[in-house]
Length: 270
Figure 1 (cartoon, rainbow, N blue to C red):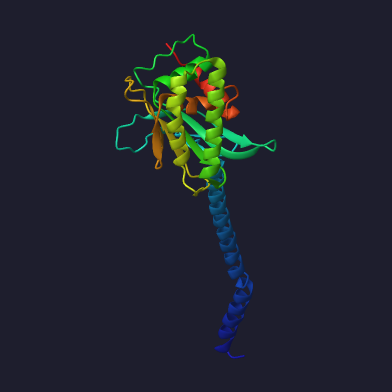
Figure 2 (tube, rainbow, N blue to C red; figure 1 turned 180 degrees about the horizontal axis):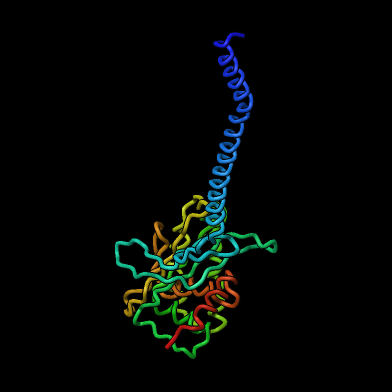
C-alpha cells in the first residue's frame, strides 16, 4: 500500500470501529426517553387518580330546605308559601307521614302538616300535652295539609276517604256530646258542597294537593274556610276544624304523621 493510501485506510478503519462501537448509543438514548415518558404519564395518572378519589369521597350534603318522608322518599319543603288572591302567611312544616290502606299496607300518599306557628294569636302552654297542643294549633291558626300521591289516584277515591273521615268525626262528636243539633244541621250543606268539589279526573303521581284551613275570623258571621286549592272551598267552622283534626284523632289517618307531629310539638309553648 502506498504512503498516501495508508493514512486513509487507517482513518477508514478507525471510523468503522467507532461506528460499530457507537451503534448502541441511539438505543441508550431512546431508553431514557421511554422511561421519562412513562414516568411523566404515571405521575399525571397518579395526580388525576388522586383528584378523582378526593372528589368521589366527599359526602353529599343533605338538603336542609326539605324533609323527606322515609316511607316514600317524597320531599316536603320546610317552609311553604301558597300563591293566593288573599295574603296567606308562611307555613312551617310540623311533620310528615305516609297514608296506607288495607292489611297489605299499600302506600296511597304522603302527607305533610303545616301551620302558621308565627301567628301572635297562637298561645300554646308549655305544660299542655301533645294532643292538646295539636288541637290548639288547628283551632287557632292557619294550617295546610299537603297530600302527594305515591301513585296516580282518582279525586273520587280521595273524596270518598275524606267523607268517611268526616262522618266518623260526626259520630264521635255525638258520642262526646261536643256538637249541638244546630251545628250538625249547619254542617250538612257544606258537607254536600265539599263532596261536589272533586272532579272526575286523576290526580297524577307526585302532584301536590294543598288543603288550606283558614285562620279563624273571630266573627260568627264569617265561618272558617276550608280551601281545596284550584277546586273550591267550603265555609263552616265544624267542617273546617274537624277535617284537619281527623288526621290526629287516636293514631290518626296516618299514624307516622301523628307520631312526627307529636314529637315536634313537645317543645312548643311558653
